[in-house]
Amino acid sequence: MKLLVTGGAGFIGSNFIRYWLQKYPKDKIVNLDKLTYAGRLETTKDFSKNRNYSFVKGDISNLKLAKEVMKGVDVVVNFAAESHNDRAIQDPGIFVRTNVLGTQILLEAAKRAKVSRFHHISTCEVFGDLGLNEKRAFKEIDAFRPRTPYNASKAAANHVVMAYCHTFNLPVTISHCSNNFGPYQFPEKVISRFVTNLIDGEKIPLYKSSQNKREYIFVDDHNEAVDLILKKGKAGETYNIGSGVEKSIEEIADSLLAILGKPKTFKKYVPDRKGHDRRYLLSTEKISKELGWKPKYDFDIWLEKTVTWYQNNQWWWRPLKLGAEKLYDKTGQK
Ligand code: NAD
Ligand code: TDX
Image (tube, rainbow, N blue to C red; front, side):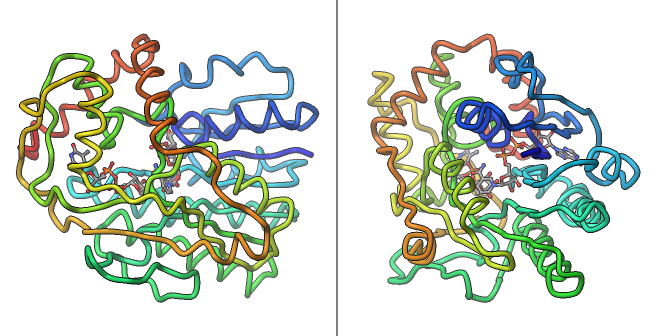
């Protein structure tokens, strides 16, 4: 089988390629990535010499290129996106261009290439937010109520993906995953930012609404679920992928302080994110009943392993850290 993975030089995409090449050593993977600030060839270093892997630098919004790289491809997995809410507050336009228009171009190329599956990586955030004590979880059939430029762009992309399915019979699937953590996450997201700050002996900035919660999943649980959806999922269907493990910003901060042996005085409170979503939680009843998936990576164990990874791989994140923090010079969240 030949896969086109987009955004494979970023956090989840690179972990997906690493996972796939190990599990299916005979499959071929082409990675199409624009190498934005978040895409790094260093992230793909350990598998870049694999003879079944090739890299193409380019934009998913380039139809000519998309048609070219789609030749002979059976399955497309679209990870490429602008992914950080804080950046979307500074520059919403690029989120619409890449996440919505880019996805449409890729769908067009996939339609012409008659691929057997187009899998689109989406997010829990399309459903909007939940109250901190609300007793429900988002189901696949719930209405989209995005509230931030990032989650609005992801929701819009989902509609375009489904439009290509209904109108052109393109065999698509979509997955909505909760917050991922693990190796190679750009040090702008909460866990990777906090860990790298603490390794550097810097305080960690908690946004003012620090009781806000997220549902955390180790990145390989996400990869295994996508694998299963590609193998057993039904075209036209959407699947939630979540762990059920909810942590507030305070809890994340306290766990990381404990792992790294730092006192609570390393926490500091900074102005809130604009439009800060309070909470997301996904129901995973569908993927568990229909495909038999369940998460297997324990949060505490894999958080500790992730911290160890950042301690042992400073060559990877240290060159990125100053640039990542520049965003917060502008927002005052430092
Ligand atoms: P990331 O920012 O680490 O990586 C994104 C990658 O996409 C980078 O390599 C970047 O260079 C590439 N890219 C960006 N614009 C491109 C373009 N126009 N053409 C080609 N490549 C382009 O993001 P991530 O955290 O790995 O997220 C990957 C996907 O998973 C995204 O679609 C995101 O919305 C989704 N998602 C992420 C999470 C999470 O917790 N990180 C959770 C659910 C869903
Ligand atoms: O420095 C920080 N301090 C802080 O308190 C940062 C970066 C974040 N936070 C808070 C804001 C959120 O409540 O931590 C929580 C998580 O923030 P992020 O790590 O930025 O993730 P989030 O906005 O929830 O979005 C992530 O999960 C869903 C990914 O970035 C998205 O790509 C994915 O779709």
